Length: 176
Image (cartoon, rainbow, N blue to C red; front, side):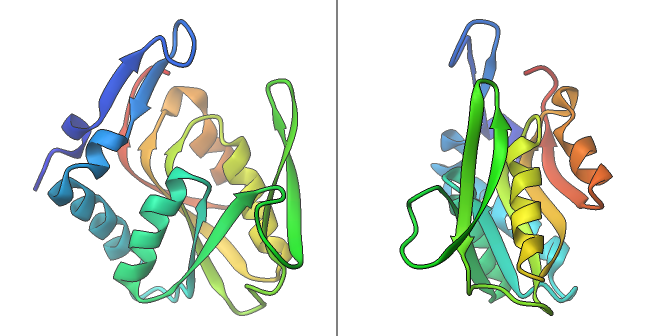
């Protein structure tokens, strides 16, 4: 087993002073580490009825698509507003200075589907909570979320748990 945490580079003071940026590009550039991270997530959810994996733009696409392939299920991209063609469903969420919107195709999920949300990192949880809400609006079951990295001090995983979402993460990093 590879120490996945050792494959993640920390960049201090990015994007602003006082922030420790956890850079997953060094993990995905390592073929065995990347494979192991995808497989650990997929292994956790095999056999529990997941029909789709949803990934949040952009780094959630990387891990989510890999997990979907490993599990043999479909992949649902959760995109920023205006990036998907056709009819979409949108969900607003708060940013530090304003509001943003994420979207999925309106016809991609239905009642009876069980969706696993995957992203690279959970920090404050705002985008993940919006994604779960959006997925649930389709009638699908969305009660599982997996992340490569959790920043527990920022409380996002706890906020998601309060929304009746079971969290799985590969790595905890203290600090933010």
